[in-house]
Image (cartoon, rainbow over all chains, first blue to last red; front, side):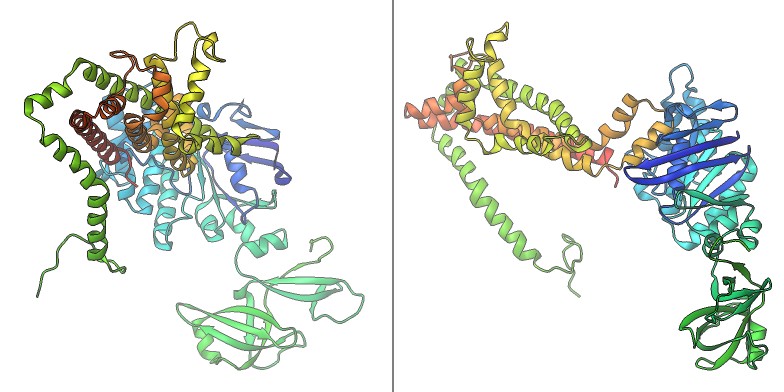
Length: 349
Length: 277
């Protein structure tokens, strides 16, 4: 089912959590709401679920306006960061809950409930744990139970609030892959909230980057990573080095000469930084190697720009690192290979 | 190698022997010894004398009244105590702190004061009594009211922290899954508070069984009608019938012990059933 959000605003006391949000989500999409804490992403999700009411604006599920429809009747699935399982019920009863609370007319028979729950438990690979209680499961298993519970009512929309936030890195990766597979199989329109850019890039079809109650950018993972439309998005999606400089005839020049020329910031990803031993051009920056982290295929190098007291991060392929033979404490020359310039005044190129 | 006892788990804090020894001594001196004296005293009676003393019709009537009224009061306290705890935890309103403080007052008040106050209110000409179509003071209803009054804090104070720690997300999860408000309350919230409510019930019940001061004023103490067991014991003592008094006390003690043991068992069972955290 498609979701349309038009002009939604929300304030908590004097804090503006959401400012005029407009967002269209197509049927079957897997969308990530990405942003730092306090950016309003969870509030937006809770408003879609009906756990919070918007001050302004309307929300449509398909052609139906649901802005004032109660949570109970919205038929959405919701997965909480801290699972929110019913502690006093077994895994089986947890998953069956949504079916058992239906009115007699709509409630499936006991046999059908059992069949459905067993099916879902095998989907999340927890058939053997049906009689256990949530406290006897690991975090990853609990979140899988929560997912099965949400799917039991056959929701048309699945909402996940930092679903993997409380799990350790390895389990998180596994569940992420698993969520994507689940989505490919069932095509439920899904929205998940995360502050982890890697997770959003990895799982979502489309990413909505949020900041301070506003949507900064909407696009595919490639789009938001390769063509960020603001310094915020650039900074939030991956590591970045900022060079202060100026624009000269549309060309960016490094350095802060005290003249009236237009100031500009250049954003450079660590892997777009070139390290050389000889000074190649006037633009190159002199920097001292502070730390080398050489585990894995890429080598992470931390540098300190001597003049500006600024730290830089660079990533080199291992072969190149060996060729250069950089040692900690050495002075090298650094220049950006590819950069994105934002002029502070209007943040356009 | 010497095998250690399996009584305790390994702990970084020493002192198992000392603390258990102290506990045993303390409980023995403070609880077990005085209670044992009751049985020692009654042992000096003949079996038939004992039986006659504890099955006297007036005494039997008092057992019925004491246990019945205490049970009724504890039940009332569970329902309204949970309600008050709910209101105090879930809502904020002006005067909340005052109400929160008032809940403890029945603990602090000398029970005789409470008894006199309640009696004045509930007599046929009292502020409240004059509006009621039935008699309250000097009837079992009045006794139940007095026992409810003194037992109120137990349930509230037991349930309050549980509700405070209750994860509201599970409530939201229940609503999202399509459960109505009643279903959410009875299927998600009630199971969480049942163990605490039961403990509160047991405490309120036990307190009511032993209560004397507040009841004697409102009860009217009419033989066969409104005499509670503690009053029977007092009456016997006043007539220097120490043996009769301890005999009744022994019976009271045994019944109370069995009932509390039963409630404890119930608690253990609900704990196993409902809390798996």
